[in-house]
Length: 83
Image 1 (cartoon, rainbow, N blue to C red):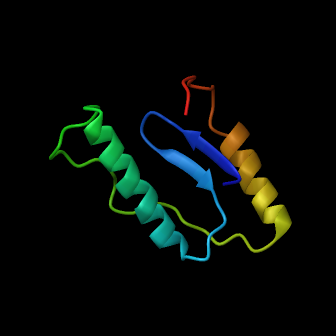
Image 2: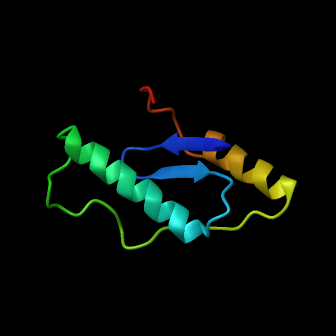
């Protein structure tokens, strides 16, 4: 993982994977949904995510750098907390 920013209602991540971005996004959502429900932070039956999300291929090092900068610095004030 190159960059991660978890917000109150969504998250941004820059990762390298041999899988298509859509599959990676689905895996992130599935894991997060399980954990949020296990911890009692979200109702068991209530929907949690929008139908899709933004996915991109980043082919060049500069694209990865720009995406990481956006994730780290372009999301507003830090919400605090720990991962």
